[in-house]
Length: 214
Image (cartoon, rainbow, N blue to C red; front, side):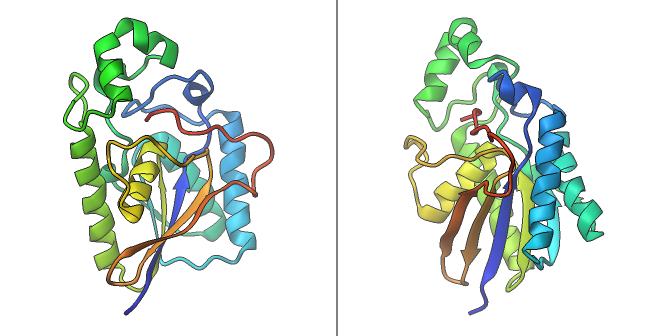
């Protein structure tokens, strides 16, 4: 069996991350610290002499700009894929964690309870989100069997990939962190997914914020 490896990268920091504001599909750019994190990440990949066969990124600019730092150092191309976007959080998008409980108490309760089929008023349910992420994971592993895929996406996406890899229940409380600009490794041996390494931020200077959109 050929093993297909995924190196999963969460995008660098944004001002909305700092403000604890829910982003979802909202297209927010990296802040200066996030741009520096992207550079540090790309330099660490170069130093490790990582050899990858293809680079994919979410088409939202916070991920695409993180991927651009890799493109500049490795002289490669990043392939945008909208299936790698963060979960659409409906009417919760744009609210801080403190605002959400006041402005949308019912949606916030459903969000915290991880109600699998709740679409958060115009958003995407956890079940729909999981299906989207599972589909793109399966498509990529079949297309690039035996190769290494570098993939830049979002905290919620990487958390979902972790759940799929480890068979964690979709409605279970989150058990791992997904810091900005972290490196996370999973693989598939042709039979099943395997978790190889998670939440590596050793290449970053200073604090890296955890994911907030879950």
